[in-house]
Length: 112
Image 1 (cartoon, rainbow, N blue to C red):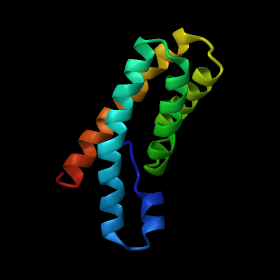
Image 2: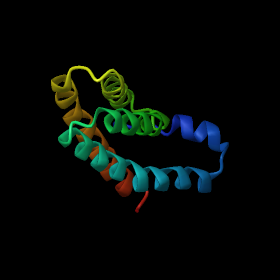
Image 3: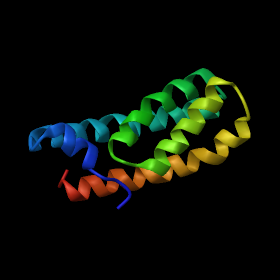
Image 4: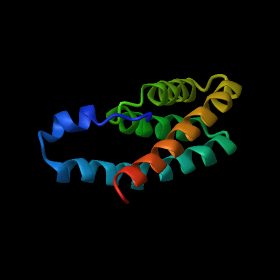
């Protein structure tokens, strides 16, 4: 399991409906944002790459996905600085793979 509900559970204070709500929002937004990020990479649109990585980062952080958060942060920084596009392209598959795995795990774990 590459995610942890520790942060969400702390925020929820026992409210299971809140936990399910956060998971549902993650499942709705993050795959869409990731798809848009991939399109921005194909277009070499640094500004969109920055904005989308910035948007994805707190969502994966909330699920305790440290490696994924680090990848999003690196893509965000490189996109903001319009630097080293090859490095962004090297990191993106890691981000994509981790998010796909977590989406699959969350759907299974929460029967969604």
